[in-house]
Image (cartoon, rainbow, N blue to C red; front, side, top):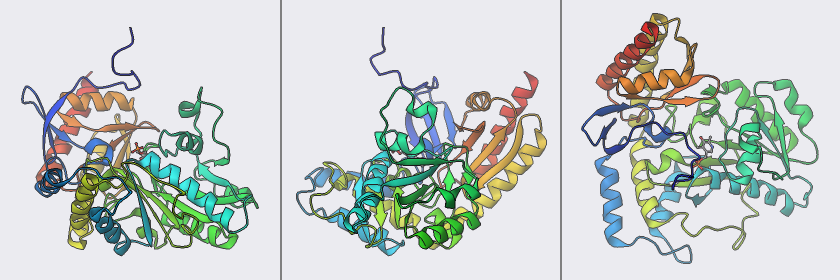
Length: 391
Ligand SMILES: *Cc1c(COP(=O)(O)O)cnc(C)c1O
């Protein structure tokens, strides 16, 4: 008999009833150190006082009004994002995949309104993940995500990640945009080197096409800059953000330049819940903390510490781990044994990690994790690796 919850997830036998900072607690009181942060979502950990305050204060005022009316928190969050990024304008969604939908629509509308309606194609890369909507799965294009769900949304050109030489020949007079994650998350924590991101920007400029960055996982302080592309010193035309921006409340957005967004006039797009007062109250509180240069400096310092300790872990367990990869506190351990076994061995040591493609386990802690917790995390991962060696 089919379970009452549609069985699309293979879940771990863990259930958390409470969270405190970097810790998640089961009903029996067992405490787990959270290096997953709900898949890069809880950037300030669990139950951060400023976020709890923002949400509960708003909950007592008004929950939902719709986008038929002005939403002061939404305006404030848009202003914060515009002040702190390349963007001139922001549209709010409830998730990353909805941000992908709009990014694709916006790029196509941009060229339609410029009198180039044939420019509909978007170039994407293997190993990418852009969400589970029809546009999201068509964009990523993997067999795993698309099989059985056809006919797929047309207009995506899939290239091999890392095959630089294939990109320019793939650009034609039908191309609207290149869509890429500065650091692939689901694909196995694969950072695009700064040089490559610069190269993509140049290519887009030379061919008059748009650069769309998917920073749903790598954005909002995760790499030690507010947005990951800042490391390369370039700016996109359109950017998808979600996960971290809501700190645990469902919230996403699309940031764009005035030129890229020029086709999105009144009535061309919308959302019932997107940018609702609750989500935007939390989003403002997240931005006020994470966009602070002092906070980002701390992320970078802690990332250096964590990475150094993980290098030691890999050296101590050469039969279990191959390498450390990633950027900032978006880290991955490439495994030599099956990554799912390492994640499971971690559960026994009460440390949470998240598997990814390419046999990687992801380490995406709250950005607020402390030095002591980093040391404890590595001790627990060390114990998990030792338990696998003993098995
Ligand atoms: C998680 C993710 C998405 C999809 O976001 P949802 O909120 O799950 O819809 C899109 N792109 C990237 C890079 C992601 O990591």
